[in-house]
Length: 176
Ligand code: RP5
Image (cartoon, rainbow, N blue to C red; front, side):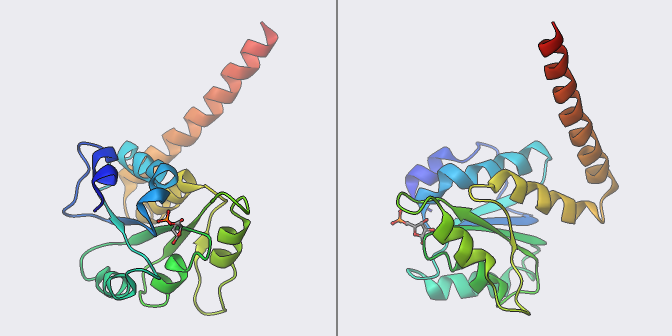
């Protein structure tokens, strides 16, 4: 793992017993992908973080995808920018759900990333979130895990209630 990425990881980032793999094509994607890690940490979901490139480290990427289920992962969140082939290639070698995060780069505002992740052929789905939508990718992973975990389901309900409360507080502030 690149040193600057390692340095920016949460101090209590759990590496063993991970249920979610947060992977990205480059350490330069971390400024976007860290939102997924933060969300998972907020819900207490063990996760791992890895840089894997469909183009620069293709064999490592395939090995990661092929071993993910047997290593205990339940969901993979994959972010990439530009010719963003990482999520789709991982989806092609694992039965786990893959959530794709289009990372915006400098020139095309992330439309290139979005289209190259979302336009998968029938039979090989990637659950694609919005451009830069790593937080929602984390929430989708939590929701998948919550199908078999009542405490996570309760935590998601509290999260939704909190969102509603924030809206009400903003409404009250507008009336003041
Ligand atoms: C993609 O190329 C990565 O996911 C990243 O978004 C983009 C640029 O990578 P770097 O040149 O910054 O390493 O594969």
